[in-house]
Length: 134
Image 1 (cartoon, rainbow, N blue to C red):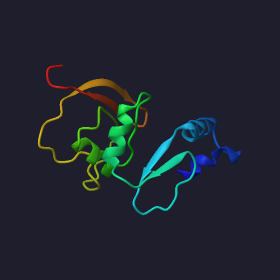
Image 2 (cartoon, rainbow, N blue to C red):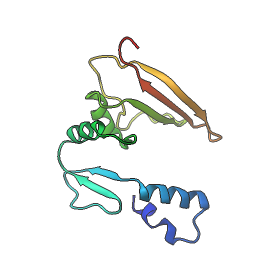
Image 3 (cartoon, one colour):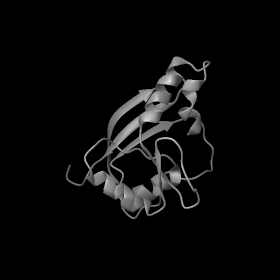
Image 4 (cartoon, one colour):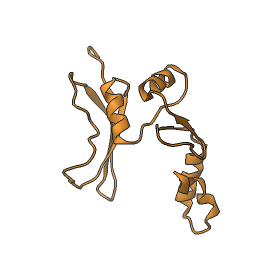
């Protein structure tokens, strides 16, 4: 996170990197941690329940919430707090790592909203959660 906070101080950065840094700095962020003492930049440290904080934020008017990190995403998926899935799929099979999707007791139905393939062979897919009867 910190490199984007100071990207505008580096004259060697490409324009697209500087544009991303401006967006990054302007976007409020929550950091969920029980071990960190402080966070920097446009971020707020949350030590309490991530599920309660995300549920509270979803009730407020405003823009979308994005979740980074497979562990956090997995727990929010299991609690039914994820409405859309925006994934970048890289053409690499690792065979291990932190699972993004948790074991579920019930199926989650999705509707494809958008796809995009990049020159790097990375595929972006966006799915919206479909409630029963939709």
